[in-house]
Amino acid sequence: MRDGPVTPFYAAPQHGPRPLPLFLEMLRTETAASPDRLRAALAGLAAYQAADRGAKRRLGGVRHRRGRARLRNYGGAGPPVIFIPSLINPPFILDLTRRQSLLRWLAQQGHRTLLLDWGTPDAAARDMDIADHVTQLLLPLIRRLAEPPILIGYCLGGTIAAAAACLTPVAGLAMIAAPWQFDGFDTGARARIAELWAAARPACKAMGFVPMEVLQTGFWQLDPARTISKYEAFAAMPPGGDAARTFVALEDWANAGAPLTFAAGAEMFESLFANNITGAGGWTIAGTAIDPGGLACPTIDFVSMHDRIVPAASAIGFADRRELAAGHVGMIVGSGARAQLWQPLADWISRTRAGREAPHHSARRSPP
Image (cartoon, rainbow, N blue to C red; front, top):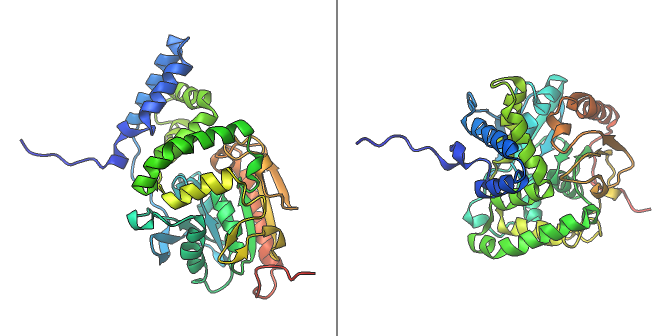
């Protein structure tokens, strides 16, 4: 008997949603009183696993490399604009499909658009915390550019972008659904996150990684009913239609992603969520206190008012704050994303470019 080709783990549809056993347990609990809902959700799950994904999506070409990190080019002109995604989930939420790509759209508007791809950590990176991701990966890539860039960070990427802006000259900083005041998270949510980490920490420490399954478990616990109901809704969608293709693309994104290094996961759970080190003013990197309120460059914060992942109360509090009637993901790829986020962000970039002076020689304002 001849051996056939082996399907890689990350490409095997039976492994989504991840972790599948937890999804099935939530499915049983949420539909216990309704066999019809159970059948619909199972039909949606089967349809998702069997969906035709077409050709593999390709991100922008690599412009610069630093270790496992890549700075990917999406074209455009003028001063560089770097998008920094979260360490959690892959970066392609910003370039989801040809029609739903914030990056490609901004490049078409004439902005020189770049994407930071964090890559996949190996075992040697286990002690690399969030601060190390800033100093060892992001800052060297920024310094490869001919002029200070505008930084735009999404979710935890916004937290990271704010730190980078305090450590090297930049032309502007935009934070999108980015947490900073971690005590703005609901007390119950923080307690559940702490409980999850206490249970997972020993195994994660032994592996040197925080697997995506651990993080996904935390996300699902925020709203288990919605996690199941969206699969019920998917079962009723016409196969191959726009809505169905978007659902598959989003679920593939939500269920994908490299693991966090153990040190980055520990810093996130213990320093950020448990101790609010950023909001309390205690975050120091390379001997510098991270205080985005003292930046000399233009800053803006796009805050989702319907966010189940990063609540509005956790936002940084910049004077220029734009409130969006959209969810954490919907603000990036939803039907109203172009009007609510894309165009206002493009306008802010244009104003920042038009008003920029000579290259900044300091990342911070001089003290009074």
